[in-house]
Length: 84
Image (cartoon, rainbow, N blue to C red):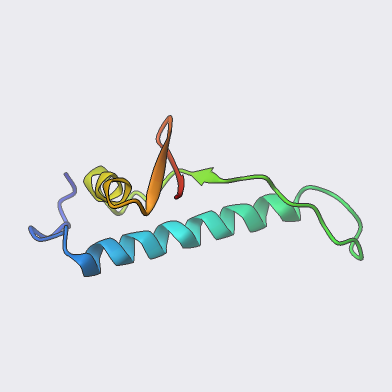
């Protein structure tokens, strides 16, 4: 486990922060993909189709597994998770 993780890391506040960090990573990954898909500067752009990402490393796998158990995330396999 990570050295900087407190003993009580499974608190609702900790899990809420982990979920927020996951949502931010998903959003930024989608924006990055959409910005490089092509189309002119005045086009409406295209959707990226990205639904799953690798969660931030600063949270342990146990936190992601707990969020899956709670129904907040879904494990997509290969270390990727998506919003439930």
